[in-house]
Image (tube, rainbow, N blue to C red; front, side, top):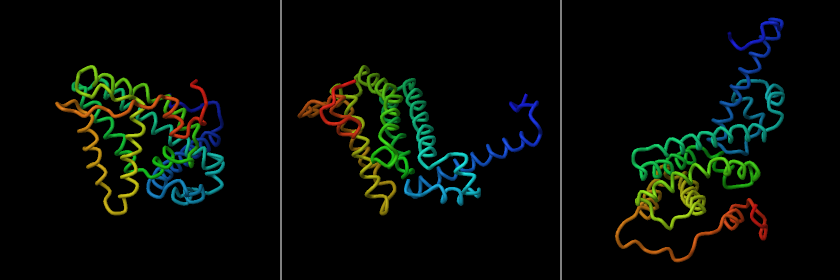
Length: 226
């Protein structure tokens, strides 16, 4: 069985296949355009890049935000899947370090992804929902490395989004000059996170979940925890 409705007229089946092909072309074009040029590009630009009619793109997705949301959900699913793989890595430290590295590599090659995560362009509700989806898996990878005595025990889950932000700032600002220099700063961060003799104590406690969400713009100041 090919998944098509054999009872439907042949013309209708062909139209559905054509619509799905145009949908996939539009998604591929959006990935490329947003990654290279950011979310400021409109659906007309994406339709031209895809080689489909502008009216077709609007009929398939309605508006640019719907397209952004779908692509962002793809990225979140990929991150959650990678975190699950990292949780089974033979070396808990390599699982943790590999997860941070992979996630930041995605940021480095995708301007649109950075804009969704660290600005209001893509919409805060989508980011909040995404965090609820993948942060538990990331937290499990972190705890596993801590339980193995390889990751400093005073690292908190709420530290991780800010670490991503710090390195992503290096990606953003240095990209016109060097697209790879951010990896130097990730190496510095990872060296500071692994357990070693004479490690400096954290000077202050980590943010609470509510505080970190306020910093990220996901919770108004003074809002009680959910």
